[in-house]
Length: 195
Image (cartoon, rainbow, N blue to C red; front, side, top):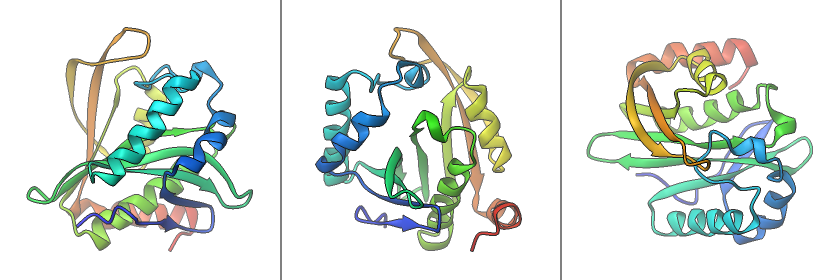
């Protein structure tokens, strides 16, 4: 069963449940409006940020979605957020998503450290059969990142999600299955010398 108080960490990042005290730190890193083009909320808007944080806390409390603050351990500061959601115990699957990083941390491999922690928890502690991801068809950076970690492209849902700029997003799904995890894990271990 998904532990809604779970903390995941390695030498680079710590993922811990979002708290109300995180708002001020989030405000410092969410001001770049361009960061939210592929996101469903514009967190550069203070009201949307507050709503987003309170919804994340509420989702955690109600066991709907486990939203994490991402802490960059070398600097001991919040650099973004990621979540587990759409958990189905019966179907033995979960979604990893709602992920964003402060602009200064794009393209530095931080997301790979995050995904490794989350995938390891899903397959080795929760013993799930499937982990799924979804993103905007237009978000080539995210799509390439998912392929790079070994996620398999599955298909597109047309006109699926309303985005912050009133654009209707086509959503593309990816997954990693239980039997694929050993190879995916080996790639992480080889590339980043992770444990």
